[in-house]
Length: 316
Image: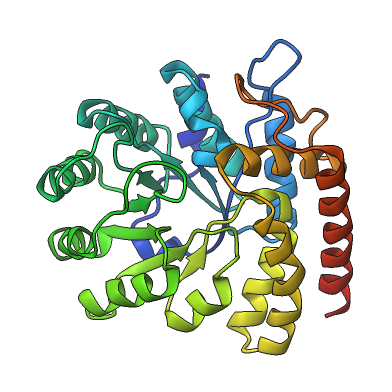
């Protein structure tokens, strides 16, 4: 049985966007000593993520998607859906530098059982608003599962305008969801919700750094990296329960950890370090040419903060 057959054998895609909510952890891609995708470690990572409170998993930017070949992206999409079945939802990033490639990735993701696809705009060229609308609409029309429009300008590219996002919601309805990451996070989130009459379903996408403010403004979930999923799940549950004192206690050390990560590669490096530290990964290897994103003093500070975060979550 192929990976695609395994992914679709147990679970079909979610019917609508209301099933996509809560804590959706963006996982890391483990590599073996030969630089290949380590399937066994990836499966155990998924078991750990769901055991620690994830409502779903996401294959996205910090999964090193931009450093994978098209064939590896296909493999990762199928593995994501296979290993997520029985546990929670699976979201697959399909953004590309061309509309044709993004559509191709979206169709494959749906074929292997993704509950939703997520797309960033092209990052190498500055598309006009009209071109971006056509790009995202083409992806949405190629599949029947929801499309999460990701403004990944915190990492790559330029911010998506509120007008583009509001138009996509108007034309695609609830099939369009959003993950805005352009600063200022809070005011832009409120502008998007105002522009859609409060109907847009939006995810916080800054690793939990702005989760409390974003929750108060109306997000339906968060897409943090998976290394600290136990803390994000505790924070999200506290917010849903209205326990803001507990939420603020957890958010303090979490914000200090996130503040030490300044770009995409440093996020990947820190997250893989913490997965190794917690016994989930055997190696913190990431795809080159970038390396040495964290030095020993930074590693020690991160470890101290994670210990404080764990103590806070356990005691809060």
